[in-house]
Length: 223
Image (tube, rainbow, N blue to C red; front, side, top):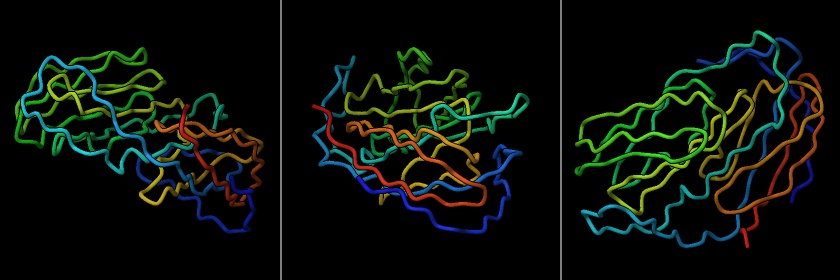
């Protein structure tokens, strides 16, 4: 596990599309999450599997989400709830890991050549879009914070995760495991990492106004 370093920087505090603006002092938290070797994905029993296709474990399984827990918010902050997209292509959910704020509508377009049936039995959001053909889109509003596991009832090998937050201070790692949380509120926070592969210890950080903190993590495989 790396040691957090501090890099002085000047930040241009311009909110991106749909971003909530923290009116207090802010800084940036960034770093890299490295993972142990990926385990083989197991199959989930399904009603049917029309194709019999079993794709290999995707590099998308290495995606992690880094976030503040808890995160300060002002009384009348407006969450950047909008629309997000989780596609279905090649009998996979794309992206496999999605992070959104509460109130966001997620579209599930079927860009495949076969029917899909997207559903979840998660406590944070239970839904079933039913079977729909290629070219159609189903949509779900995620109003409650939590982790939602998504499946296809036709293809047992398809699964994905949607993490729903009640604040905007989170980031999904890129293909190299790097993350960036801009406009994070200044102060002392606990930095957490979610990964389907395993766990890592939380990190306590103190962020000053206009500062960039580097915080790296290594996720060990769950026993």
